[in-house]
Length: 372
Image 1: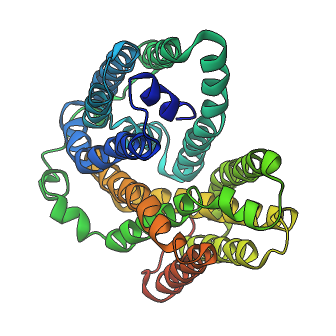
Image 2: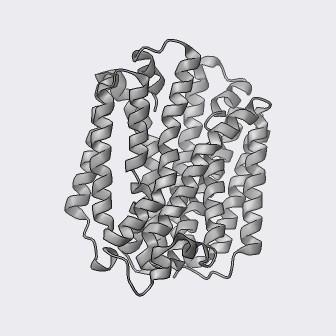
């Protein structure tokens, strides 16, 4: 991601507008297709097993990522990123694997640990990619990324021991395992889908505008990237901390309290972004924004895991992942459109969404007790 515009320029595109267009389309096609296909892969995992689906995904991703090092035209890169979106689906499956691997009383903590890793990966990965691109060159960096996929494949092959109950759907519960409509009828599940979408929408909305907002607050042009990078890192680290502590909170508070509290913390963080008189005043906002998002998302998955039958967890987590990815894909587009009128309007929208989600959860979530 850090050097994708440079790579597209290397492939022969010289116009800045065209580079931006190719970059946006190439980055957006992967989460868009992943959102469509995650429930499908999850349903297959319920039927044939999690491990074989993860192996399928990681083998495909290793090959596709390696192929990106040899493209000769922008459309080649776009097509491979589309294939990547088609073959992924490991995000929701890893959460399903975590839920399968522990008793229900420990599910929230297990999901929180996996989501912590999922959050820290994108936080650290771009920095590593940028260094590798400068050191080895743009094309070899894709081969290194493929190597990371291969390493993950090795870990799954050697270390993941799938329990027999997770390998196939149960014929005793066909309504939950066979039809996605059955999942939507489960207690709170439709509301949790909405929260997953809204939380991810807000979480990704700051990406297109944060550097511009920092610059607007008076930071010298030579320091804008560093300050924006610091704020991004604070959001990512705080979100990872939120994922990690969410399981502990769910042992002490109800899911309704944890999700609405996380939404409220995120809304306060967005408010601090909007009213900050200087970039340094945004630091506490970044910490609240990230922590609220991480806490709420882990609570959403843990709560869903408590109501989805074991035999249908692949499909259920796949639907939740799809809702999240739709938020990821839609957020930069809408945020960019709003930012054309006012940068602060994006933060105002975030405040309204998070406040509405917190209110809905408080009012509409059916009684959910502690996770243990």
